[in-house]
Amino acid sequence: MSSQKGNVSRSRRQKHQNTAAFKNDKYGATVQVKIANSKVHDGLCQRCKDVIEWKVKYNKYKTLTQPRPCVKCSQKTVKDSYHVICKPCALKLEICTKCGKKEDIVIPINTQKQGEDEEDSDQRKTGRGRRKKDVDEFDNDDDFGDLDSDEDFVSDSGPEKTGGNVCP
Image 1 (cartoon, rainbow, N blue to C red):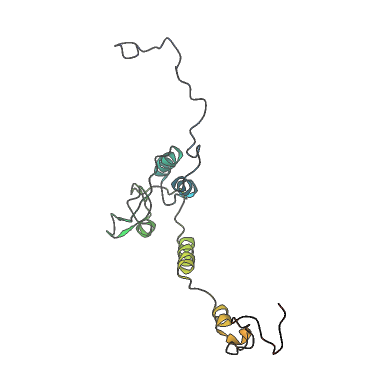
Image 2 (image 1 turned 180 degrees about the vertical axis):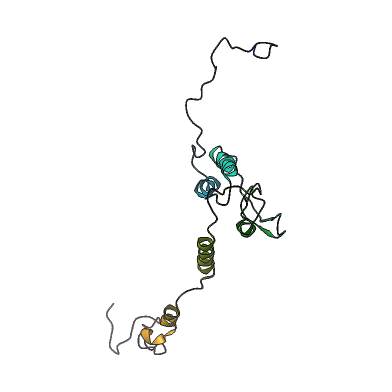
């Protein structure tokens, strides 16, 4: 028995061998798994990055549903799971967004790209950001002709009567 006092050597090999690695999308990836797999974990030290990647790999990563408060500025700006410091504070103080230690950041926070992505997504959601020329094209009624005249439309009152006997 392996729990006996003083028994340091085993007499048999490991009973269950893991022959296949765990796959978090084995039975079809859910939306949450796809998001977790595609997410870039930036602003983290090497240890914190490894911890979060392990959580993603073994299906333990849980996404945030609402923003959390930052421990530095106390505003609800933390949008990434397991992080405690918002990205602007971490960028300004040059610290890890998860543990808060001043260590080497593996993937630095890219603020310019993030700002452009948010602006593009806002424009897509609201429908704004279209060129003025595109909007003006639809406002011009000259393309459709004179819509007030009834000559272009066929009468819905039945077959047209032409004065003579109509053969059935």
